[in-house]
Length: 174
Picture 1 (cartoon, rainbow, N blue to C red):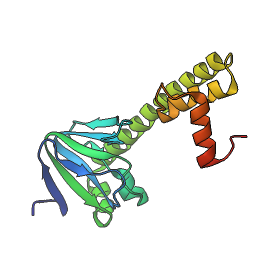
Picture 2: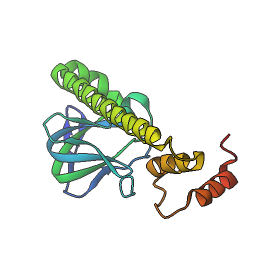
Picture 3: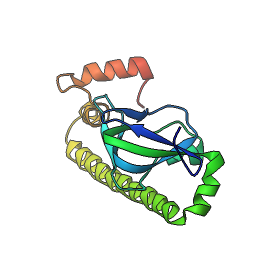
Picture 4: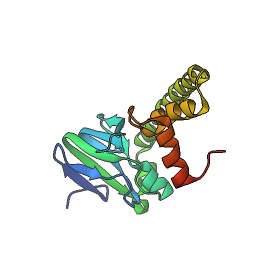
């Protein structure tokens, strides 16, 4: 097994999955070479490209290490890649020995947070516009339009049918 300062080095071929969304974890990764994309909802109709790690030292999967939470995205190598896996036992030493890489990791997290905040603001504006435009419609029509945006309800489903199914499964809206 190849190591980097006691941390495991992993080689990934293009198209291979480094980790899957929802997996339990307690490690993070630093990119040494290659390119890895992070997806939310990979393989679903709500698939979303969250981030692309393409620069030496880009960090991936920090939440697993820092919060002990399941993976929030799926990481897939876009090209042959090499990563260093850092576990909790080696994280403190990594920070002390590599302050520049630690600062880059913080900058990566900040950039991703800013991108998500921007995406949230754009989505909020779309919802406000949609609801404002829908004020001319009936309550069922407005709820249907909102459901179309949030839940990908097919266009050919009439509002009454959607509302009937929703209330049967979730109770009344009001």
